[in-house]
Length: 288
Image (cartoon, rainbow, N blue to C red; front, side):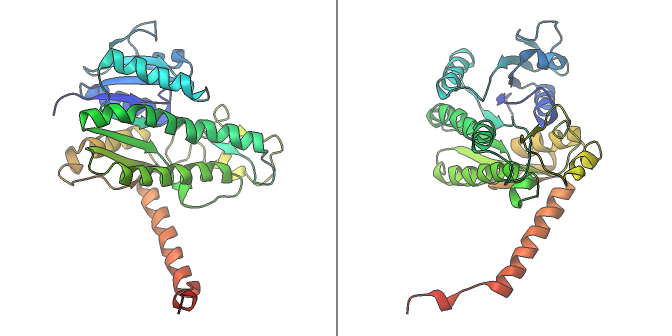
């Protein structure tokens, strides 16, 4: 398989960071973005994180770029235009950037929710829309969005975060059908609990009037069962159709990542089957 060119958002830590390292180790080119390019220093062998360079690990080419997804649409669109003019095409887009919003539905303000959804959802759609025409022209491409098991059910204290991930999954599934037959694949990656910086004090954004009962988040931080390095390797193999995941055909619309993701999503589906059996209102609602 020939080397690919990736555009990955949110590469300063977590899945974005480790997926970048994995792709570079496979001789791919990665355009790695962050709001602050200095946070990409760990990926670069030089002291200047703004310089294109050979990766510090592997043989791939790293292109670190600044991208603030909270900015206006025209800035994101200009970013994509500049990228395409310099690299020619992007084979794989990974919409990974995001953070946790902590606070109850009753507490969160409209402004907080709107601002949060801008970064966690609508900016990714803007980036995706800007890149799709190029992929259509090439009759190929892969768009992967980073969802979460949180998108399968509302959790007290993180309902806004859960809603953003559920919305991302729905948009991804719809886009997948809309692009059917174009040569562009679309999938939503839904990790379980991985040991990343997502729940760290520095990464969590809280509502101004944060309530009680969120101690479980603090307790979970650093105790997650998933190894993000292994998770990134699995994600790479799945997206590229290599290794254990070669020859499986077209990617599904939603992909659970990690053992407890499979367990939790399976539990949700089983509970919903029970609701359908007990409460499903079927033929009695049909027009006679």
